[in-house]
Length: 414
Image: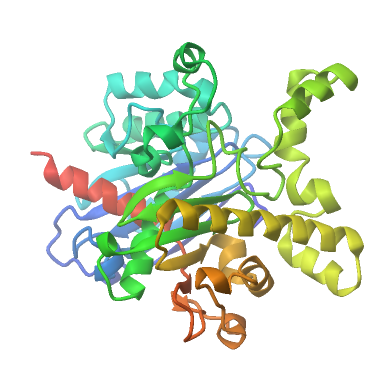
């Protein structure tokens, strides 16, 4: 990622779209974050079966960063700039080939459990969910509003991070607190990174040459944010993140699992207000809190130099991973594959090796030679003797959003 306030973008020539008919087969994917907007324009001319069919040609992509810190004053300006970047390349939002705009929306609550066409009523319901995702949903909403202004005639599709996890059974989604209080304030496990877990679980099945409904997979999405999921036959039955993205694995700056009494202790003994505790657990914890770095590459470099703090941070990180792999093996009963994805999962040889070491009793064995090889595509890194396949699968959340949006608008009468 670059460190610029203007958009950085790449575009393929018009002829590369693979769609000479002029039909509306393109989807613009918008990911409006708290201080950035990422976009991709994809041509879905081959259909929506993106994982097994290899469809979804990337026509253009871009990123607008540091919104509010420079020339790009706000998200509205960022989105208009992105639209201008596309227009400069002959791929403007006024194109009749554009079928829909797909929007990443972080929190869908219990109402939005599948891709949803945006209407005024839907937008109002998404706004009601802002208290559950105060850092993300407002920016997602802005992206939807501006896109609707730019192309009011075009279908806008919201694809929710929480949707893939909506299949988690009630006994796994419920926290053991007073039911009336939980229901009144929407307190339950929702889970996040859903588009990634959905994509990777299906891509893993494809790598094994099997249908998703035949495969039980533990997906480990390891980036600066990190989450695990247990996917039985293509259906999510458990995930590590909860009401918010704070629960679960150790992350770059988030603590993950924590005794909730730690919060009360800090309020009472340290005199910390709630906002300061929130900042501590979300922005000053995890790897950063343990050793001062949240970049696994830098932690690896420091470990090689004998840095004890970096070593401890790494060990805490992989210990939590191993615990979740064991727990989700118990949840699933039978595991066919463990899949690593996202920045750390795809690139850290050491994390994969350490996280799965000593699990031969569970049928999990990594081949150190295969694991050390670096490649761009989905690949197996497990030993031939391993009963459970271990895979490295690059995620593609934008492609997943485009596929879901395109499938939805194709099913809706024009």
